[in-house]
Each structure stands twice: as C-alpha cells, then as structure tokens.
Length: 321
Image (tube, rainbow, N blue to C red; front, side, top):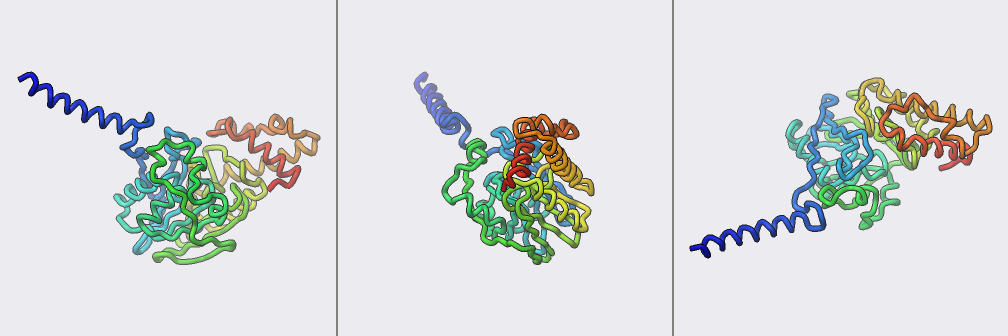
C-alpha cells in the first residue's frame, strides 16, 4: 500500500524537478518570455504609440525605454521603429491589435541605427513579411549573424530570445513623399544628428511628426555618435514643418512644446562650450566649465551630460564626425 502511494509522489516530484531544472537552466527562466506589459496610447486619429521608461536599457526593463508607433492605414499598419527585441515587437503587435484592430504590418520605417529602435525587425519580416525602410548604416554597421550589439549584451535571455539582425530593404538619401495604405507620409533624412544617419517621419494630413532620437524630453540625450550642429539643424528642419503632435524617441511630452528641451540643450551646449573655448578652457576643464545647470534635474543627467560636453568640445575643436 505504501509503495503504491510513494510511486506517484516520486513521479510527480521528478516531473516538477524536471520543469524547474529546464525553466532555470543557466541560472534564469528559459520557458517564459519577458513580459513587457505594453499599453498603446492613441496620439492621433490613426496613430498609436508605446512609450518607454526614461532609463538606459537594462535586464530589468528589457530595453523598454524607447518609443515606437503604429500608423493604421486602410488595410495594414505602418510601423515606426520596431523596438529592442523580437519579443517586444510580438507583444506590441498583440497589444495594438486589441485596441486598434488586427491588420498586418506591411511597412516598417526606422529612425536611426541604434539597436534599441530596430531589433524587433525580424518579427515583422518573418511573421508579416514587412518591407523595411531605414538608414543604410544599419546594413553597414550590423553584420547579419553577429548578434553582439548593445541589446544582445544587456538584455536577459528571455527578453532577447528569438531576436536576429535583419537589414533594411530600402534606404533613401533624399526626402521621399509616398502613400502607404492610404496614408500620406514624408520621410526626411537629416544626416548626422543624434547618430551617423537620422530621419524623421512627417504625416501632413494630421500634422504628426515621429522624430526618433532627434528629440528627447524629460531626460538628457546621449550624443555619443552625434553632432551638436547636426542636432540643431535637424531640430530646425522638424520645427519648419506644420505639426501639432510630435513623438520623441524617448520622453512623454508630445504637444507643441515637445522639442523645447532639445532645442535648449543643444543651443546652450553650443554657446557655452564655444564661449569656454574662447576663454582658453581646454578639454580637461570643459565639463566643469559647462554644467548646464538647467538640466540637472532631468533623467540620466549624471550619466550622460559629461560625455556630451566632451564630445561637443571635440566637435568644435577638431571638427569631429
């Protein structure tokens, strides 16, 4: 009798141990995907966006610190930036489908090459067969099969699982105006701004701009790959358009004040770095000379401001590109 009772118990215990061992192989959960808990926000008549945290990418946030947007057309979605991973992209599509309807994503349009904005590409290519439009620099700087970029190194296995580098299908060096699924779009290249090659997307019919990382608010930008002069030129191009809603690459302010922080930050950076250089301040003293105290309370100031000022000094001193 006792033997009959013990055998099922042992079998149950063994099954449980197998599940636990499999689930935590390598020290972390392998069976459950990272839960992004994404909630789309309607920002215009036919545009829904996901807004990420004002943080750097971490294992804890799964890279969910970027803003991505769905544009609903007559029979498909156009997607602006695909996010940091395959799983993020899959969960974003599932979330927007619940509130805006289930349509295929036939076109993906990318803002720039930083991988938190486009590593969801392979979900849309593999599942939806989407055409991907974006900067040629992605193809040049991220070889297929070399999954060793920032997101691959930072995110947990259950967040980055399934993610592959997928190149863009088309790129444009001049502004292109086109209609997709009944939606008029204007894809505008601005050269080196936040990164080596940046774009923004203008929707003239509802006066919406999707700005990528050319615009951030509520936090300090990272100018590690960019240009102060390029940023100011790009912001001027953005503000020359007739827009009422603007979605930054990072940040939550989307009204007519959306660009104010970026314009102020780069204007003051240029003015004060050049003034300090005129006063004889060299590279060793430039950060202390240009604190930009107006931004000390913004997210990521302590982490990024010093490197931004150092790069600005190099740009104005050596013509850094």
